[in-house]
Length: 431
Image 1: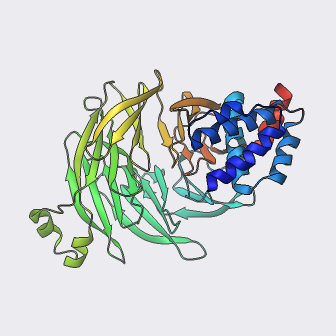
Image 2: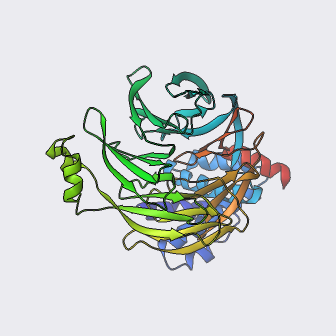
Image 3: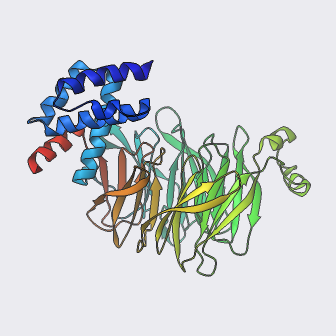
C-alpha cells in the first residue's frame, strides 16, 4: 500500500514534467517502477533552470518519506558526478602528535590519543566539536607513554585506552558528568590491539607475546578468563561484528601474513579451562562467558599485510596488503571470495567500513585518504581527501557522516558529509 501511494505521487510529478512516463509503466515490478520514477525526477531537477528552487518546490508538495528517498537519490547522483561526498568542516589542534582516534556511535564524541600520555575528549556542540576533558593514566618509566588506541563503547559509558609503552589497557567510566578512572588491565607485553563487544561484557586484547587475552565483566570489574597463545600470531586490528558472533584480527608478521577469524563456540569452555578460572569467578558467571574458537585463516598472497576491517554484519572483509581487496565472507561456513579489487597499489595503513557497508575508507602516511561508495553492485571511488599532512590512522563514523583524520602536525581534521544544497549549488556553477 505504501509503494502504491509513492507511485501515485511520482506519477503526478512526472506527468507534470516534460518527461515521458511510458518507460516506467513498461517495467515489470513495483521496485523497478519506483527506481525509474526516481531517476526521472532527479533528471527533471538537474535539467531545470534552478535546481535548488525545483527541489524546494517538491519538498513543499510531497510527503516526507518520499522526499527523503528523492534527496538520497539526488545526493548519490551528484556526489558521483562531482566526486565530492565530504567537506572539511573543522580543524582542531589536538596534540603535538595524535596517535589514535575514535568516534562515538551517535557522533557526539571524538576521542584522541596523543604522544604525551593524554587522552582528549571532544564533544559536539552545535555544528562543531569543542574540548570536553583530558584523561591521564598511562605512564612510562622513560617518559610519557603514547596512546596507541582509543575505543568508545556503544552506549558511550566506557572509554578504553591502550599503550604499548606501559603494557596496559585503561578503562574510564562516565559518571554522569565526566569520565573517571575505572580499571587497569595489566598485560605481560606490548599491547597491539584492543576490542570490546557490543554488550561491553567482553574485552579482547592482542599482545606482542603472541597471546590473545579475554577479559569478562562480572558486574563489578573485568576479570581475565582466558589466554590463547599461537607462535605465529601477532594480533593487530581486532574487530567484533555487531552481533558478537565473530571477531577478526591481523597477524602482520612477514612470514605469516594472515587474517584470523574467530567464531563464538556454542560448545563452551573445555574442562581444563573451566578448572583454570574456577578459583577466580563463580560458576554462574562461567556459564555466561562467551567462548570463541579459531574458525578460519585467510592467508595473504602478498608479502605484506597492513590491516583489515570487518563489516558489522560480518559479510564483508576489506584487506589492505600491497593490494586493497574487498572479500565476500560467509560466516556460516567461513568461506570467502574476492568481491572486488579497489586498488592494485594501496599500502593503506588503515581501512574502515560504515555500518551499512555503503562506504569504505582507506589511507596512510604516504597516500591520500580515499573513499569508495557501493553503487549498482560495486564500490566506486567518489573522493580523495587531502589532509594537512600525512595520517597513519583515521576513523569513519558508524553512519558514514563524519570522518576524523589525525595529522602528523598534531591537528585533527574533521570532515562531514556535504549538504545536498551545496552539491546542487556546485553543480549549477560547473554545468
